[in-house]
Length: 407
Ligand code: GLA
Image (tube, rainbow, N blue to C red; front, side):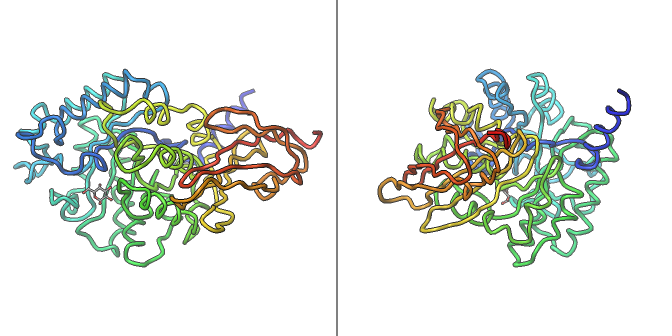
């Protein structure tokens, strides 16, 4: 008995980073895409970057079903700081917008059973022009640990990409040194890609729990399609290094905002599940409509996103704006697949697709269920055909559970 327990422990250590965090893609909420760098608490007290916003979002996460659905992190993004460090060189929150201080905010978030995320930058300044961590990494890591921070997003504005390869692991070292488990979210590869350089994903996966590969998401379908397209190309083979403890981050969920139709919101949710992406919402949870809320909390979609294999999906083909994606999931031999119609005009496409080209390679049969409405489609063999209808800017999203070769 003992030997088995030890063996299991060893297996999980080989996959995970030192800190043991992020064994499935992290889930939470981040202020950036929806609330940006709104520091005007005088004229816009409800929506400005201040402690009230994060406390209210923590309340909504805890009370409105998000926490029960698996969302954990409340992430403070850029623009939370005072413009200057304190006299002791320590970071400090803007005293007017965060009058209780960051430790108190962390305590509040923890009191709701949630986790506290924060944003800093590897360079001399954050992207929004607040003090960066360059020359202060050790003390900043300690400050975050003292405040009870559970996640650090370390951005890369105002720095040289040449310094990142050695610098991001140094922050990892200082985070570990604090003794507090802090999930480490790195923007390192995104800055390489923005400078047309191929990142060293093996090194990145060794130091970071999650990492941004590409552009910031904006509140539009074009932005979602461009990000999904980038992940489909898998340039630098970043999906090979993903797994428990290490995930590629295509950026936040914009579901519940202004730019996506219902169909497009379903597409984002399905594709983030297929890509094994962190599910970090950036929307106003105080005002979200019931459709978006139900989608963000969809049990089966989340189950696929969180599948313990942690293997991201791959784009198999892209023909006339119709993309075929598959992701291996449990139980063994099963797949989740998405047929995504990236074009946003036209009429629904009706397709008849051979199951093996959707990852059902057998030799036995599969039970296929549509994920969003839970409709059982039928039992299929690799050579059978399946009929699919996909709407413009919509997705057909299904799970094929492998029944073994006896069927
Ligand atoms: C960069 C990041 C964004 C956000 C902003 C904040 O653009 O990629 O996710 O954190 O900085 O300034």
